[in-house]
Length: 138
Ligand code: SF4
Ligand code: SF4
Image (cartoon, rainbow, N blue to C red; front, top):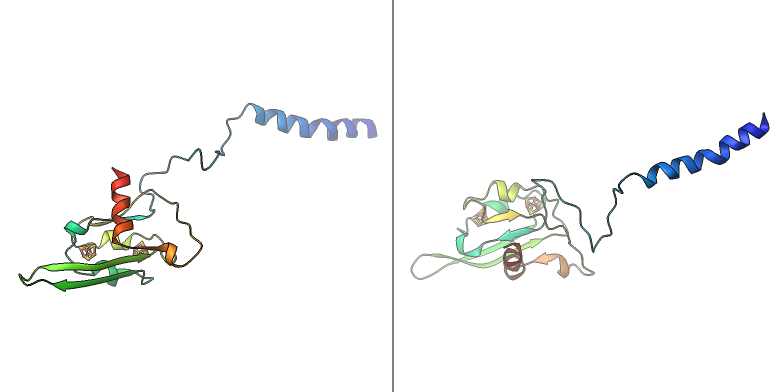
């Protein structure tokens, strides 16, 4: 009886390991390999300054107060975006800024999720960084 129990205890783990030899792994070798993200995944923003109306609706709707925008008016009464920053350290990627954007997709969330930094400043995305993102997305 004890011998039988020992044999079961001895072979059961091997059977489990053996079964997994035949199953395709669900893990990937990140960062060399990356998972295919589902449609609608919300990652780092992309911002199109040329199309922005400077209305600040995105900043007002943001529940975490992540967006800072400064707008001036030119002599010919056009709006000029002086500053547009998103503090990703506080962003919860809810997508409300995109949803309520008056210009229509001027601010948009991409599938890029690699947000990392060692200081607060590293997580502040200004116009240049958000626009560069646009270049990379093409
Ligand atoms: S995704 Fe949400 S939390 Fe992040 S900036 Fe947009 S509105 Fe704010
Ligand atoms: S809501 Fe859209 S158009 Fe208005 S300031 Fe924000 S990004 Fe620009």
